[in-house]
Image (cartoon, rainbow, N blue to C red; front, side, top):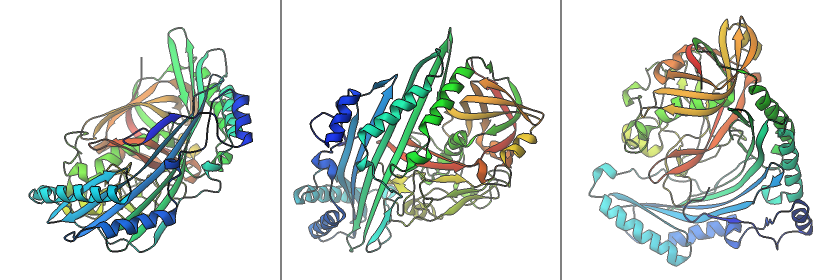
Length: 523
Protein backbone atom coordinates (compact mmCIF):
# COMPACT_ATOMS: atom_id res chain seq x y z
CA UNK A 1 0.00 0.00 0.00
CA UNK A 2 2.98 2.37 0.41
CA UNK A 3 3.59 4.45 -2.75
CA UNK A 4 4.93 7.91 -3.52
CA UNK A 5 3.75 10.34 -0.86
CA UNK A 6 1.62 7.64 0.72
CA UNK A 7 2.82 7.24 4.30
CA UNK A 8 2.82 4.19 6.49
CA UNK A 9 3.42 4.32 10.23
CA UNK A 10 2.82 2.19 13.28
CA UNK A 11 -0.04 3.66 15.29
CA UNK A 12 1.05 4.94 18.69
CA UNK A 13 -0.84 5.36 21.94
CA UNK A 14 -2.12 8.71 23.08
CA UNK A 15 -5.30 9.40 21.09
CA UNK A 16 -8.77 8.04 20.64
CA UNK A 17 -11.69 7.48 22.97
CA UNK A 18 -11.47 6.07 26.48
CA UNK A 19 -12.96 2.83 25.18
CA UNK A 20 -10.26 2.60 22.51
CA UNK A 21 -7.50 3.17 25.04
CA UNK A 22 -8.98 0.47 27.23
CA UNK A 23 -9.01 -1.88 24.25
CA UNK A 24 -5.35 -1.16 23.62
CA UNK A 25 -4.51 -2.05 27.21
CA UNK A 26 -6.69 -5.18 27.08
CA UNK A 27 -5.04 -6.53 23.92
CA UNK A 28 -1.52 -5.40 24.71
CA UNK A 29 -1.07 -3.33 21.55
CA UNK A 30 0.01 0.25 21.00
CA UNK A 31 -2.67 1.50 18.62
CA UNK A 32 -4.11 4.83 17.53
CA UNK A 33 -7.07 5.06 15.18
CA UNK A 34 -7.03 8.86 14.98
CA UNK A 35 -5.81 9.88 11.51
CA UNK A 36 -3.19 12.53 10.97
CA UNK A 37 -4.37 15.98 9.82
CA UNK A 38 -3.33 15.19 6.24
CA UNK A 39 -5.19 11.87 6.39
CA UNK A 40 -8.41 13.57 7.47
CA UNK A 41 -8.41 15.35 4.14
CA UNK A 42 -10.85 17.94 2.88
CA UNK A 43 -14.60 17.77 2.86
CA UNK A 44 -16.51 17.86 -0.42
CA UNK A 45 -17.00 21.63 -0.19
CA UNK A 46 -13.31 22.22 0.47
CA UNK A 47 -12.35 19.95 -2.40
CA UNK A 48 -14.63 21.80 -4.81
CA UNK A 49 -13.15 25.10 -3.59
CA UNK A 50 -9.71 23.69 -4.42
CA UNK A 51 -10.98 22.94 -7.91
CA UNK A 52 -12.15 26.53 -8.33
CA UNK A 53 -8.77 27.84 -7.16
CA UNK A 54 -7.04 25.60 -9.68
CA UNK A 55 -9.18 26.90 -12.57
CA UNK A 56 -8.24 30.47 -11.71
CA UNK A 57 -4.56 29.54 -11.93
CA UNK A 58 -4.78 28.14 -15.48
CA UNK A 59 -2.96 30.41 -17.95
CA UNK A 60 -4.11 31.40 -21.42
CA UNK A 61 -3.27 29.01 -24.22
CA UNK A 62 -4.55 25.87 -22.51
CA UNK A 63 -6.98 24.03 -24.80
CA UNK A 64 -8.30 21.70 -22.07
CA UNK A 65 -7.28 20.69 -18.56
CA UNK A 66 -8.26 18.39 -15.72
CA UNK A 67 -7.37 18.23 -12.05
CA UNK A 68 -7.76 14.95 -10.12
CA UNK A 69 -7.53 15.13 -6.32
CA UNK A 70 -7.17 11.83 -4.41
CA UNK A 71 -7.50 11.33 -0.65
CA UNK A 72 -7.21 7.91 0.97
CA UNK A 73 -6.72 6.37 4.40
CA UNK A 74 -6.18 2.67 5.05
CA UNK A 75 -5.93 0.66 8.28
CA UNK A 76 -4.63 -2.87 8.72
CA UNK A 77 -5.42 -4.88 11.87
CA UNK A 78 -4.07 -8.38 12.39
CA UNK A 79 -3.76 -11.24 14.88
CA UNK A 80 -1.27 -14.07 14.29
CA UNK A 81 -1.04 -17.13 16.52
CA UNK A 82 -2.90 -15.27 19.26
CA UNK A 83 -0.70 -12.16 19.14
CA UNK A 84 -1.92 -8.75 17.96
CA UNK A 85 0.31 -7.57 15.11
CA UNK A 86 1.55 -3.97 14.81
CA UNK A 87 -1.32 -2.00 13.32
CA UNK A 88 -0.64 0.48 10.54
CA UNK A 89 -2.16 3.51 8.92
CA UNK A 90 -1.42 4.47 5.32
CA UNK A 91 -2.56 7.74 3.81
CA UNK A 92 -2.21 9.63 0.56
CA UNK A 93 -3.36 13.05 -0.55
CA UNK A 94 -2.34 14.87 -3.70
CA UNK A 95 -3.41 16.07 -7.12
CA UNK A 96 -2.62 15.30 -10.75
CA UNK A 97 -2.86 18.09 -13.33
CA UNK A 98 -3.31 17.18 -17.01
CA UNK A 99 -3.25 19.80 -19.77
CA UNK A 100 -3.81 19.73 -23.51
CA UNK A 101 -1.97 22.61 -25.15
CA UNK A 102 0.01 23.44 -28.32
CA UNK A 103 -1.00 20.11 -29.84
CA UNK A 104 0.46 18.02 -26.99
CA UNK A 105 -0.57 16.52 -23.67
CA UNK A 106 1.30 16.83 -20.39
CA UNK A 107 0.70 15.92 -16.77
CA UNK A 108 2.35 16.63 -13.43
CA UNK A 109 1.46 15.70 -9.85
CA UNK A 110 1.91 17.45 -6.53
CA UNK A 111 1.31 16.62 -2.89
CA UNK A 112 1.23 20.39 -2.29
CA UNK A 113 -2.27 21.58 -3.18
CA UNK A 114 -1.69 25.19 -2.18
CA UNK A 115 -1.82 27.80 -4.93
CA UNK A 116 1.97 27.60 -5.22
CA UNK A 117 1.93 23.81 -5.51
CA UNK A 118 -0.87 23.80 -8.09
CA UNK A 119 0.78 26.57 -10.12
CA UNK A 120 4.04 24.59 -10.18
CA UNK A 121 2.21 21.44 -11.36
CA UNK A 122 0.47 23.40 -14.14
CA UNK A 123 3.80 24.87 -15.29
CA UNK A 124 5.50 21.45 -15.40
CA UNK A 125 2.55 19.90 -17.24
CA UNK A 126 2.65 22.68 -19.87
CA UNK A 127 6.37 22.11 -20.45
CA UNK A 128 5.74 18.42 -21.03
CA UNK A 129 2.75 19.13 -23.33
CA UNK A 130 4.86 21.42 -25.53
CA UNK A 131 7.63 18.85 -25.76
CA UNK A 132 5.17 16.07 -26.61
CA UNK A 133 3.62 18.20 -29.37
CA UNK A 134 6.64 17.33 -31.51
CA UNK A 135 5.97 13.59 -31.03
CA UNK A 136 2.67 12.72 -32.72
CA UNK A 137 2.81 9.14 -31.41
CA UNK A 138 2.24 10.60 -27.90
CA UNK A 139 -0.83 12.61 -28.89
CA UNK A 140 -4.01 11.95 -26.90
CA UNK A 141 -7.49 13.31 -27.63
CA UNK A 142 -9.09 15.96 -25.47
CA UNK A 143 -11.30 14.30 -22.84
CA UNK A 144 -15.06 14.29 -22.80
CA UNK A 145 -16.61 17.23 -20.95
CA UNK A 146 -17.35 16.50 -17.30
CA UNK A 147 -20.88 16.85 -15.94
CA UNK A 148 -21.55 19.73 -13.59
CA UNK A 149 -22.06 18.38 -10.09
CA UNK A 150 -21.52 14.71 -10.91
CA UNK A 151 -21.31 12.51 -7.80
CA UNK A 152 -21.18 8.83 -6.88
CA UNK A 153 -20.89 6.99 -3.55
CA UNK A 154 -20.38 3.31 -2.88
CA UNK A 155 -22.56 1.46 -0.36
CA UNK A 156 -21.75 2.06 3.30
CA UNK A 157 -24.02 1.85 6.34
CA UNK A 158 -21.28 2.29 8.96
CA UNK A 159 -17.99 3.87 8.01
CA UNK A 160 -14.69 2.24 8.88
CA UNK A 161 -13.83 5.57 10.53
CA UNK A 162 -16.35 4.55 13.21
CA UNK A 163 -14.76 1.14 13.79
CA UNK A 164 -14.61 -0.09 17.37
CA UNK A 165 -11.05 -1.21 18.10
CA UNK A 166 -12.07 -3.61 20.87
CA UNK A 167 -14.72 -5.28 18.70
CA UNK A 168 -12.33 -5.52 15.75
CA UNK A 169 -9.61 -7.21 17.76
CA UNK A 170 -12.08 -9.50 19.52
CA UNK A 171 -13.32 -10.65 16.11
CA UNK A 172 -9.80 -11.27 14.85
CA UNK A 173 -8.79 -13.11 18.02
CA UNK A 174 -11.82 -15.40 17.69
CA UNK A 175 -11.11 -16.10 14.01
CA UNK A 176 -7.43 -16.71 14.68
CA UNK A 177 -8.29 -19.18 17.45
CA UNK A 178 -10.73 -21.03 15.17
CA UNK A 179 -7.99 -21.54 12.60
CA UNK A 180 -6.14 -23.76 15.10
CA UNK A 181 -8.00 -26.91 14.06
CA UNK A 182 -5.27 -29.32 15.16
CA UNK A 183 -1.74 -29.65 16.43
CA UNK A 184 -0.40 -29.76 12.85
CA UNK A 185 -1.38 -26.10 12.29
CA UNK A 186 2.04 -24.42 12.53
CA UNK A 187 1.04 -20.93 11.43
CA UNK A 188 -2.22 -19.05 11.29
CA UNK A 189 -3.51 -15.50 11.13
CA UNK A 190 -6.52 -13.23 10.65
CA UNK A 191 -6.56 -9.64 9.43
CA UNK A 192 -8.81 -6.84 8.22
CA UNK A 193 -7.64 -4.19 5.75
CA UNK A 194 -10.05 -1.26 5.51
CA UNK A 195 -9.87 1.77 3.22
CA UNK A 196 -11.67 5.08 2.76
CA UNK A 197 -11.08 6.62 -0.68
CA UNK A 198 -12.32 9.95 -2.08
CA UNK A 199 -11.68 11.61 -5.43
CA UNK A 200 -12.47 14.94 -7.06
CA UNK A 201 -12.15 15.44 -10.83
CA UNK A 202 -12.65 18.93 -12.30
CA UNK A 203 -12.04 20.41 -15.73
CA UNK A 204 -11.32 23.90 -17.03
CA UNK A 205 -14.92 24.41 -18.20
CA UNK A 206 -16.63 24.08 -14.82
CA UNK A 207 -17.35 20.37 -14.78
CA UNK A 208 -16.83 18.42 -11.55
CA UNK A 209 -17.22 14.84 -10.34
CA UNK A 210 -16.85 13.67 -6.72
CA UNK A 211 -16.73 10.01 -5.69
CA UNK A 212 -16.21 8.19 -2.40
CA UNK A 213 -15.66 4.55 -1.52
CA UNK A 214 -15.24 2.38 1.58
CA UNK A 215 -13.54 -0.97 1.10
CA UNK A 216 -12.77 -4.17 3.02
CA UNK A 217 -10.18 -6.90 2.41
CA UNK A 218 -10.38 -9.63 5.09
CA UNK A 219 -7.76 -12.36 5.21
CA UNK A 220 -7.52 -15.75 6.93
CA UNK A 221 -4.72 -18.27 6.50
CA UNK A 222 -3.75 -21.56 8.08
CA UNK A 223 -0.59 -23.55 7.37
CA UNK A 224 -0.32 -27.22 8.36
CA UNK A 225 2.80 -29.36 8.42
CA UNK A 226 3.61 -33.03 8.91
CA UNK A 227 7.17 -34.12 8.26
CA UNK A 228 8.11 -32.84 4.81
CA UNK A 229 4.51 -32.08 3.81
CA UNK A 230 3.28 -28.50 4.14
CA UNK A 231 -0.14 -27.26 2.98
CA UNK A 232 -1.90 -23.91 3.22
CA UNK A 233 -5.51 -22.75 3.08
CA UNK A 234 -6.67 -19.14 2.84
CA UNK A 235 -9.80 -17.05 2.55
CA UNK A 236 -9.84 -17.02 -1.27
CA UNK A 237 -6.21 -15.91 -1.33
CA UNK A 238 -7.19 -12.46 -0.03
CA UNK A 239 -9.74 -12.32 -2.82
CA UNK A 240 -12.93 -11.86 -0.78
CA UNK A 241 -12.88 -8.09 -1.37
CA UNK A 242 -15.93 -5.85 -1.01
CA UNK A 243 -17.10 -2.25 -1.06
CA UNK A 244 -18.93 -1.24 2.09
CA UNK A 245 -18.49 -0.54 5.76
CA UNK A 246 -18.61 -2.44 9.03
CA UNK A 247 -21.92 -4.01 8.04
CA UNK A 248 -20.02 -6.31 5.65
CA UNK A 249 -18.83 -8.31 8.63
CA UNK A 250 -22.43 -9.28 9.33
CA UNK A 251 -22.43 -11.13 6.00
CA UNK A 252 -18.86 -12.46 6.10
CA UNK A 253 -18.80 -14.83 9.07
CA UNK A 254 -15.07 -14.85 9.76
CA UNK A 255 -15.41 -17.30 12.67
CA UNK A 256 -17.23 -19.87 10.52
CA UNK A 257 -14.83 -19.32 7.61
CA UNK A 258 -11.90 -19.83 9.96
CA UNK A 259 -13.36 -23.13 11.18
CA UNK A 260 -13.64 -24.30 7.56
CA UNK A 261 -10.17 -23.13 6.53
CA UNK A 262 -8.43 -24.65 9.54
CA UNK A 263 -10.28 -27.94 9.06
CA UNK A 264 -9.43 -28.11 5.37
CA UNK A 265 -5.75 -27.39 6.06
CA UNK A 266 -5.67 -30.36 8.43
CA UNK A 267 -7.55 -32.59 5.99
CA UNK A 268 -5.17 -31.74 3.15
CA UNK A 269 -2.32 -33.42 5.03
CA UNK A 270 -4.10 -36.74 4.55
CA UNK A 271 -5.24 -36.06 0.98
CA UNK A 272 -3.60 -37.74 -2.00
CA UNK A 273 -1.92 -35.62 -4.67
CA UNK A 274 -4.10 -34.59 -7.58
CA UNK A 275 -3.96 -37.30 -10.28
CA UNK A 276 -2.60 -36.47 -13.72
CA UNK A 277 -5.08 -36.78 -16.56
CA UNK A 278 -7.00 -34.93 -19.25
CA UNK A 279 -10.50 -34.61 -17.89
CA UNK A 280 -13.30 -32.20 -17.03
CA UNK A 281 -12.44 -29.26 -14.78
CA UNK A 282 -14.93 -27.58 -12.44
CA UNK A 283 -13.76 -24.17 -11.18
CA UNK A 284 -15.12 -22.50 -8.04
CA UNK A 285 -15.80 -18.73 -8.39
CA UNK A 286 -12.70 -17.82 -6.37
CA UNK A 287 -10.51 -19.60 -8.96
CA UNK A 288 -12.60 -18.25 -11.82
CA UNK A 289 -11.44 -14.84 -10.55
CA UNK A 290 -7.87 -15.53 -11.65
CA UNK A 291 -8.97 -17.30 -14.85
CA UNK A 292 -11.04 -14.28 -15.90
CA UNK A 293 -8.38 -11.82 -14.81
CA UNK A 294 -5.43 -13.35 -16.64
CA UNK A 295 -6.94 -14.93 -19.74
CA UNK A 296 -9.75 -12.45 -20.51
CA UNK A 297 -9.05 -9.21 -18.66
CA UNK A 298 -5.42 -8.54 -19.53
CA UNK A 299 -5.65 -9.82 -23.13
CA UNK A 300 -8.55 -7.42 -23.82
CA UNK A 301 -6.84 -4.27 -22.50
CA UNK A 302 -6.65 -2.07 -25.56
CA UNK A 303 -3.40 -0.30 -24.70
CA UNK A 304 -1.76 -3.72 -24.40
CA UNK A 305 -3.20 -4.75 -27.78
CA UNK A 306 -1.79 -1.52 -29.26
CA UNK A 307 1.64 -2.32 -27.84
CA UNK A 308 1.90 0.11 -24.93
CA UNK A 309 2.76 -2.62 -22.38
CA UNK A 310 5.19 -4.50 -24.61
CA UNK A 311 8.35 -3.44 -22.77
CA UNK A 312 6.94 -4.23 -19.33
CA UNK A 313 4.19 -6.83 -19.12
CA UNK A 314 3.96 -8.09 -22.69
CA UNK A 315 1.39 -7.94 -25.44
CA UNK A 316 -1.81 -9.87 -26.20
CA UNK A 317 -2.79 -12.69 -28.49
CA UNK A 318 -5.88 -10.57 -29.30
CA UNK A 319 -5.62 -8.25 -32.33
CA UNK A 320 -7.67 -5.15 -33.08
CA UNK A 321 -9.27 -6.80 -36.13
CA UNK A 322 -10.79 -9.62 -34.03
CA UNK A 323 -13.54 -7.53 -32.41
CA UNK A 324 -16.99 -8.35 -33.68
CA UNK A 325 -16.11 -11.72 -35.18
CA UNK A 326 -13.59 -13.74 -33.14
CA UNK A 327 -14.92 -16.78 -31.25
CA UNK A 328 -13.33 -16.35 -27.86
CA UNK A 329 -15.35 -19.05 -26.10
CA UNK A 330 -18.27 -21.41 -26.39
CA UNK A 331 -21.76 -19.92 -26.89
CA UNK A 332 -22.22 -20.22 -23.09
CA UNK A 333 -19.61 -17.51 -22.42
CA UNK A 334 -21.06 -14.08 -21.54
CA UNK A 335 -18.61 -11.51 -20.15
CA UNK A 336 -19.55 -8.01 -19.01
CA UNK A 337 -17.63 -4.93 -17.95
CA UNK A 338 -19.84 -3.58 -15.16
CA UNK A 339 -18.60 -0.95 -12.66
CA UNK A 340 -22.19 -0.50 -11.49
CA UNK A 341 -22.54 -3.69 -9.42
CA UNK A 342 -23.34 -2.55 -5.88
CA UNK A 343 -20.68 -3.68 -3.44
CA UNK A 344 -18.31 -5.25 -5.97
CA UNK A 345 -14.71 -4.25 -5.34
CA UNK A 346 -14.12 -2.01 -8.38
CA UNK A 347 -17.50 -0.30 -8.71
CA UNK A 348 -17.63 3.41 -9.54
CA UNK A 349 -19.75 5.97 -11.35
CA UNK A 350 -17.03 7.59 -13.47
CA UNK A 351 -13.52 6.59 -14.45
CA UNK A 352 -10.53 8.79 -13.61
CA UNK A 353 -10.93 10.85 -16.76
CA UNK A 354 -14.64 11.43 -16.10
CA UNK A 355 -16.22 8.96 -18.54
CA UNK A 356 -19.54 7.77 -17.13
CA UNK A 357 -19.51 4.06 -16.35
CA UNK A 358 -22.03 1.69 -17.90
CA UNK A 359 -22.52 -2.04 -18.25
CA UNK A 360 -21.43 -3.44 -21.61
CA UNK A 361 -20.78 -6.90 -23.05
CA UNK A 362 -17.18 -7.60 -23.98
CA UNK A 363 -17.97 -11.18 -25.05
CA UNK A 364 -21.50 -12.24 -25.99
CA UNK A 365 -22.49 -15.81 -26.85
CA UNK A 366 -18.76 -16.54 -26.98
CA UNK A 367 -18.00 -13.88 -29.64
CA UNK A 368 -15.59 -11.03 -28.88
CA UNK A 369 -17.48 -7.71 -28.99
CA UNK A 370 -15.27 -4.88 -27.74
CA UNK A 371 -11.99 -4.21 -25.91
CA UNK A 372 -11.20 -2.89 -22.46
CA UNK A 373 -10.15 0.46 -23.86
CA UNK A 374 -10.71 3.93 -22.42
CA UNK A 375 -12.06 6.87 -24.38
CA UNK A 376 -8.53 7.91 -25.39
CA UNK A 377 -7.53 4.41 -26.50
CA UNK A 378 -10.81 3.91 -28.33
CA UNK A 379 -10.32 7.15 -30.27
CA UNK A 380 -6.78 6.14 -31.10
CA UNK A 381 -7.78 2.68 -32.38
CA UNK A 382 -11.17 3.55 -33.89
CA UNK A 383 -12.89 1.03 -31.58
CA UNK A 384 -15.69 1.32 -28.99
CA UNK A 385 -14.55 2.45 -25.55
CA UNK A 386 -15.54 1.79 -21.94
CA UNK A 387 -15.06 3.83 -18.76
CA UNK A 388 -11.81 2.20 -17.66
CA UNK A 389 -9.18 4.97 -17.54
CA UNK A 390 -8.02 4.33 -13.97
CA UNK A 391 -5.15 5.41 -11.74
CA UNK A 392 -4.06 3.86 -8.44
CA UNK A 393 -2.96 7.11 -6.80
CA UNK A 394 -2.73 10.88 -7.18
CA UNK A 395 0.77 10.61 -8.68
CA UNK A 396 -0.13 8.14 -11.44
CA UNK A 397 -1.88 8.94 -14.75
CA UNK A 398 -4.99 6.95 -15.75
CA UNK A 399 -4.37 4.01 -18.09
CA UNK A 400 -6.58 1.24 -19.49
CA UNK A 401 -7.48 -1.08 -16.59
CA UNK A 402 -9.94 -3.75 -15.67
CA UNK A 403 -12.65 -2.80 -13.17
CA UNK A 404 -15.53 -5.20 -12.49
CA UNK A 405 -15.09 -7.86 -15.16
CA UNK A 406 -17.72 -10.57 -14.72
CA UNK A 407 -18.89 -13.84 -16.22
CA UNK A 408 -22.69 -13.86 -16.30
CA UNK A 409 -24.64 -16.69 -14.66
CA UNK A 410 -26.10 -19.63 -16.55
CA UNK A 411 -28.87 -22.10 -15.70
CA UNK A 412 -27.31 -25.03 -13.81
CA UNK A 413 -26.95 -25.53 -10.07
CA UNK A 414 -23.86 -27.13 -8.55
CA UNK A 415 -25.46 -30.56 -8.25
CA UNK A 416 -26.24 -30.54 -11.97
CA UNK A 417 -22.69 -29.53 -12.93
CA UNK A 418 -21.22 -32.29 -10.77
CA UNK A 419 -23.86 -34.80 -11.79
CA UNK A 420 -23.03 -34.64 -15.48
CA UNK A 421 -19.28 -34.94 -14.96
CA UNK A 422 -18.06 -38.49 -15.55
CA UNK A 423 -14.45 -37.85 -14.53
CA UNK A 424 -13.06 -34.54 -13.40
CA UNK A 425 -11.62 -32.37 -10.64
CA UNK A 426 -13.27 -29.49 -8.77
CA UNK A 427 -10.66 -26.86 -7.83
CA UNK A 428 -10.77 -23.88 -5.46
CA UNK A 429 -8.56 -20.92 -4.51
CA UNK A 430 -5.54 -20.00 -6.57
CA UNK A 431 -2.06 -20.36 -5.07
CA UNK A 432 0.23 -20.11 -8.12
CA UNK A 433 0.09 -18.87 -11.68
CA UNK A 434 2.21 -18.57 -14.78
CA UNK A 435 1.19 -17.11 -18.14
CA UNK A 436 3.16 -16.11 -21.21
CA UNK A 437 3.69 -12.51 -22.27
CA UNK A 438 0.87 -12.63 -24.82
CA UNK A 439 -1.57 -13.82 -22.13
CA UNK A 440 -2.21 -17.05 -24.00
CA UNK A 441 -0.50 -20.16 -22.58
CA UNK A 442 -1.06 -20.53 -18.83
CA UNK A 443 -0.58 -22.86 -15.87
CA UNK A 444 -2.49 -22.30 -12.61
CA UNK A 445 -2.29 -24.07 -9.26
CA UNK A 446 -4.96 -24.27 -6.57
CA UNK A 447 -4.95 -24.83 -2.82
CA UNK A 448 -7.52 -27.63 -2.78
CA UNK A 449 -9.55 -29.91 -5.03
CA UNK A 450 -11.94 -32.86 -5.08
CA UNK A 451 -12.18 -35.64 -7.60
CA UNK A 452 -15.48 -36.11 -9.43
CA UNK A 453 -16.23 -39.70 -10.46
CA UNK A 454 -19.39 -40.81 -12.25
CA UNK A 455 -21.29 -37.67 -11.27
CA UNK A 456 -20.38 -37.80 -7.59
CA UNK A 457 -17.98 -35.76 -5.52
CA UNK A 458 -15.06 -37.97 -4.47
CA UNK A 459 -11.91 -37.67 -2.40
CA UNK A 460 -10.12 -34.43 -1.56
CA UNK A 461 -6.85 -33.92 -3.48
CA UNK A 462 -4.01 -31.57 -2.65
CA UNK A 463 -2.03 -29.15 -4.77
CA UNK A 464 -4.13 -29.55 -7.93
CA UNK A 465 -2.92 -27.76 -11.07
CA UNK A 466 -4.16 -27.29 -14.61
CA UNK A 467 -2.82 -25.80 -17.82
CA UNK A 468 -4.27 -24.56 -21.07
CA UNK A 469 -4.26 -21.97 -23.83
CA UNK A 470 -6.57 -18.96 -23.55
CA UNK A 471 -7.43 -19.07 -27.24
CA UNK A 472 -8.95 -22.56 -26.86
CA UNK A 473 -9.67 -22.97 -23.13
CA UNK A 474 -12.85 -20.85 -23.14
CA UNK A 475 -14.19 -22.70 -26.18
CA UNK A 476 -14.25 -25.81 -23.98
CA UNK A 477 -16.71 -24.19 -21.56
CA UNK A 478 -19.58 -26.70 -21.32
CA UNK A 479 -21.43 -25.66 -18.16
CA UNK A 480 -22.18 -22.34 -16.42
CA UNK A 481 -23.66 -22.28 -12.94
CA UNK A 482 -26.72 -20.32 -11.92
CA UNK A 483 -26.89 -17.53 -9.34
CA UNK A 484 -26.83 -20.06 -6.49
CA UNK A 485 -23.23 -20.89 -7.46
CA UNK A 486 -22.18 -17.26 -8.00
CA UNK A 487 -19.46 -15.53 -5.98
CA UNK A 488 -18.01 -12.01 -5.91
CA UNK A 489 -14.27 -11.72 -5.47
CA UNK A 490 -11.42 -9.47 -6.58
CA UNK A 491 -7.87 -8.37 -5.93
CA UNK A 492 -6.25 -5.24 -4.49
CA UNK A 493 -3.02 -5.96 -6.37
CA UNK A 494 -3.51 -5.91 -10.15
CA UNK A 495 -0.18 -4.56 -11.40
CA UNK A 496 0.42 -2.76 -14.66
CA UNK A 497 2.17 0.26 -16.17
CA UNK A 498 5.49 2.06 -15.87
CA UNK A 499 5.81 3.31 -13.18
CA UNK A 500 3.83 0.42 -11.75
CA UNK A 501 0.26 0.82 -10.59
CA UNK A 502 -1.36 -1.75 -8.28
CA UNK A 503 -5.10 -1.25 -8.58
CA UNK A 504 -8.32 -2.78 -7.26
CA UNK A 505 -10.25 -5.11 -9.55
CA UNK A 506 -13.51 -7.01 -9.04
CA UNK A 507 -14.61 -10.30 -10.59
CA UNK A 508 -17.95 -12.05 -10.17
CA UNK A 509 -18.63 -15.47 -11.62
CA UNK A 510 -20.65 -18.63 -11.18
CA UNK A 511 -19.01 -22.05 -10.93
CA UNK A 512 -17.98 -23.14 -14.45
CA UNK A 513 -17.30 -26.52 -16.07
CA UNK A 514 -14.69 -27.08 -18.80
CA UNK A 515 -13.96 -30.23 -20.82
CA UNK A 516 -10.69 -31.86 -21.86
CA UNK A 517 -8.36 -29.92 -19.56
CA UNK A 518 -4.91 -31.18 -18.57
CA UNK A 519 -4.77 -31.47 -14.76
CA UNK A 520 -1.93 -32.68 -12.59
CA UNK A 521 -0.50 -32.64 -9.07
CA UNK A 522 2.45 -30.65 -7.79
CA UNK A 523 5.39 -32.22 -6.04
